Image 1: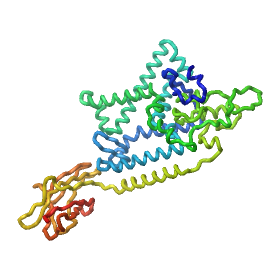
Image 2 (image 1 turned 180 degrees about the horizontal axis):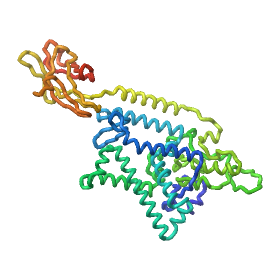
Image 3 (image 1 turned 135 degrees about the vertical axis):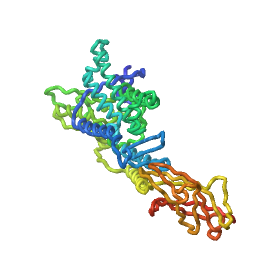
Image 4 (image 1 turned 90 degrees about the horizontal axis):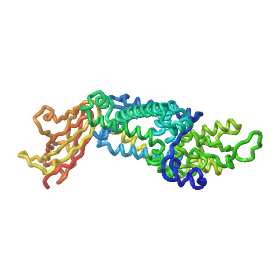
Length: 472
């Protein structure tokens, strides 16, 4: 029995793009236009414009977005994050996950159909080129089944050449988010022999993108994407999805001219199936492969207009909305997700805006204890490390805040060491060793809390706490 003759009750037992033997069924979606399609194209092309422009946008001398995993340097909206700021990035990431869960519970897979890079590139770039070169879905089917004539050879060669060229462009754009546009330009303009690693990375990215958009296509959403696989866990009966109103449409049947229609509004034209880029029949209900791209909505609305029936046979709705006629409302789960999301965003935002321009650590030197000096004072040896999180050069001066009757002596013969100063280059790191000395009368037992201020001029940039060890 072929997959096309399976009873509707068993439609979830098979993947729409595979037959009973597991062989791939190629999807040929029909070109479609309509209000949702136009709106999605406006959103999609706007996001593409931002994606390609963002690497060239600078904020305070920094790229708008940089995710340099190799050098452990991250820039988000012009703000530099170092490994010491990882807790902030973790909170931002958790907030993003909470947002995805909340958004999915409420609005289903709207992100997949409207903003996912996979959908945007496939439907608005590669599919458009395929239509331009090979024609609409019926011509594509005929061309694939035809013998290898000159027409088929030049069309396939042209299409895949353009596909690979775009894949190379996409790879370069994504690399610019990882290594920066300046380093990418250096790799592109330098001889290949000088940047073998960079060139290999670029070709690997290009090959991966070409495979995804030329061959793997909609299988990414059904097989590889973890978000798509998890939607069944996150969706509930009140989630907004692209749904078929079976109460209005069933029983379906062909429409005959002049006949008074006594059955449902669905005339079984299968236009919703023909336009689906995932190869499913939305009339079977919510399915794993559905990415909420709204093409079936536009196709069905077009047919409803032609037969003088109201639009919305396929529309954005919830299962309960169709079955019970209930309206959207916030339930307990949605409220809980919203509270968690708001809390995470508040904490992450607070940490982000109160984040200092420098970071520093002050630790007692390993393997050392206190030293008794000839004048009767006690000294401890410490190591200090200061990180400049800004694009500006800084000179940091160390001052003892408490106890006040002590001194700091940095190790070294330089003028900066004698002034207890450290110079920080842009995004630089400075390290040094220093002695902290106190008279015994200023100390409280074996351990005394010490506070050191890091100043730029008269501005206190950061306060460091440590323990001073003294004899009992």
